[in-house]
Length: 294
Image (cartoon, rainbow, N blue to C red):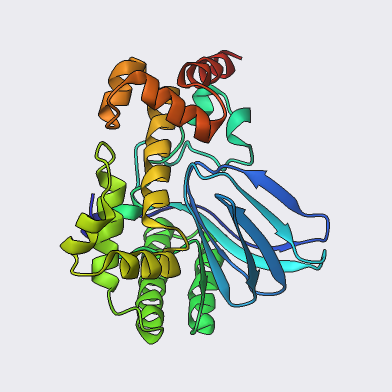
């Protein structure tokens, strides 16, 4: 799927105020945009922690466990929207997840949307400071107001407003990266797309840097500055997400699964998976099936 086929499905939209006791640890099935309108929010994913202030926007993707909490227990106002980039046959049936991954049943895990954001020409980082927050806020609040209506062409209007919102955010991101001297946006997007799609290959940063006409060290530096993660860690996390999907949702033999992910032996794959996930691939699959039978 490509951006030209963009048919967003708006699952839920709300202008919410969080009180001082708010704390949430979960893995969502779909995508979510959160705009921090007032206050400060602490967001953590993949070992990285961000303090988000008024005017920041968070882009949450499916399958990534994260925590949300308030800074100093002070109130936060956070208009947000849950969505799919493409309207799928089960879009209307899929709800919003408030559970940790290990708490989900096998049936619940089937609701995870395929993470397609990494294949777009430009996508958003997990946290972005907006230079033109008023414009983003106006469209988001209009979308939320439309969501609460029951008027003709409501779904069409929601799609149109979300597409406008996403286009504004992408333009904002591109302009901000240029303003911060990120002169190689096209090269970085190509590298990230390569890392997210070549999961069966070992990554050689020297060769990858050569392909985009950058030095290895410059590539690592600007990649981490833009995406808040190193290229190797980005590739590792993409492989791990795919491993979890195949173990949890398919019956592919683990030997075959390890080959699909580029491992020379099942033993090498098992050591790699256990080191990152804290359990063997077979134990992960058994737990997923056991949870699904409950």
